[in-house]
Length: 429
Image (cartoon, rainbow, N blue to C red; front, side, top):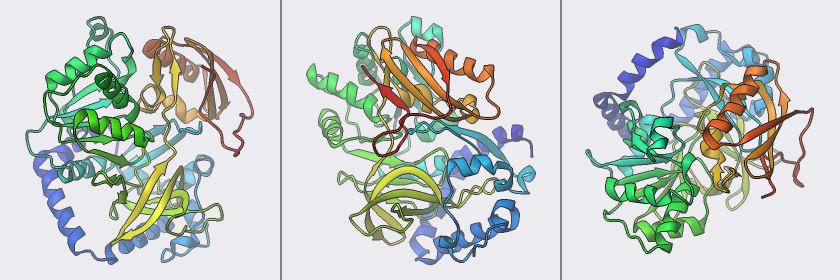
């Protein structure tokens, strides 16, 4: 089915009646599923992959035993793109997805219609959402030049984005000169809930505390997403807004969904979204109290099944609660930034990760180094389809949204940390 048919179908999925009907059915399933349903979904998905994907058919693995499947990396997916794609792809509605990668390893893949919006609605309800409540998304939305000239850094979201907020405020343009305008707008909007990049809302909260500014409206909860966050940030945000900070973990690959339910900051995974393993360097599931890499298997992406996919994110495993994994902390998402000509920080999460650049699908690995304000050096290991258009897309993004010029170096390898990892940002400022 042509990708153009996706839009009207998504409108149906986002229809309120269908959404809340799904939520009620979902909660009923959770209450009666016991331990069998996630395992049944897993086996069904593995069986489908063996039957419809050449890559998995060639493997000597058993759908009844997940551990018989080898681990999957971005590099393996890129090299075996067609073979991992289902032979039923032409009959599946899907979308092209791109992710920048906090370790500098972009990823291009196909994704069946994701259920993140549905789970996001469930999460809001668990946080106390009631119909009519206002949700502000503090994210990386790009704005028109007309809005920027008028010092307008916010707006109303399209109805299809409602699970992520009815209103948005962009982190791309925040600086010391206009932060008071951001705070004034929050005071006027009086949001009941806020969904935010951690560094973005922390910066705003710090300004409010330093200037003894208190919200005029009680915020029911603040959800942090897309980056790692730290205890000192949580504490300050909770103090300033007099509310509870919640965290949500997910990713573009749509294989896992986890959340915190109170101020304990302990994550629970959603057992019907996907299957998660926390593995050590030998590929063995870690013991409670140990830290390992998050490895995930989707239950829904039949167009390109990602089985035992290595995310690069790390988590401390704390045991189980029913079918849910309990994770004490999750690490790996970055709060990296580049600095513009005026000395203002521009968060990479907003500048790159939130934009889903097509060029990322044509890059094997990349690294950004900054030694002077307003300019960066891009070191790129080209993919097969990388062209001048890819370079132009990247340079245009940086100059238009951050006023930062780009110099490109095309290399065969990138420098690594002492632990052998590649960093996306090398920041000397």
